[in-house]
Image (cartoon, rainbow, N blue to C red; front, side, top):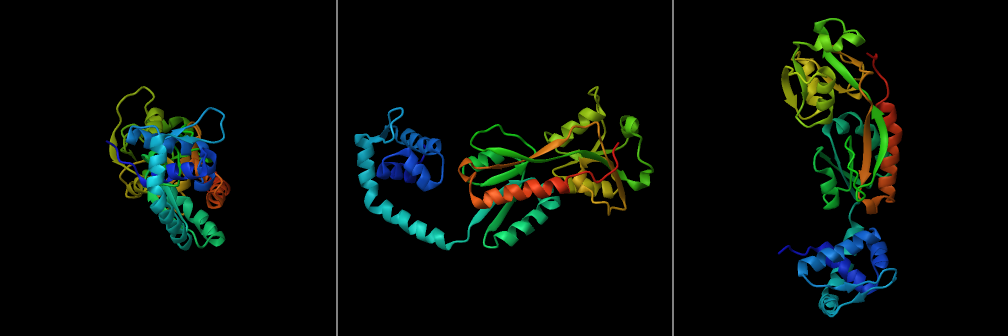
Length: 302
């Protein structure tokens, strides 16, 4: 049997105490549907109905089992929740962000610097990863995410903050850049440095370079743009990476944007109940304003 966690119990307790899902949702800073879902999940764990709610009714009714559980929780849980509220009020607010390492490394520092000017009391915890982000937000491990992936999940609303073009990068020792129409031929028999299987840029690059589906020589596959770029700087091979990974100061590698490839979106997503949180709203706006500048054209176009 699954275990009931404190979140489910707390939601049921406040629904029972305040008499409605909407009142509990306002208290807990979540949506009406999330509050109802928490109670349903607790009922599944206990295998008994706790709350009855008629369609359109503003208040709920407790079942006999629901009344029994509420009375059992009442003496202790109300005190515990009050103490938790006082404790949390004394803690620094925290935002937990999940995002790919390259987005954090290349795009986020100026955004965080501006955010810190506005909210120096807020601690940022960055989890540099690009998998399982919607699941981590829904289970409470993350508050928000910045990613190229679109989830289509109403519990994790996403906002387009910018787009970027991929760029061909190669060691300057290889000579001049290929002409726009000659990139595929130029790439033949040259070692290719790319991302791990399944990553968006790897798939786009391979489909572009080998539209007929033929095999190509992959020298190294790695997890992030910083590592891919470093391998190109070491002369191992060429790569296709986000254009914003290049700032024009590089001397050992050259690059040019590939106009034939589509622009790739970057989305800002958050837990649905945080959509109006002032810290989240400000960070979302900063990402939209500053990422558009940072990811704009910086290179010649092929």
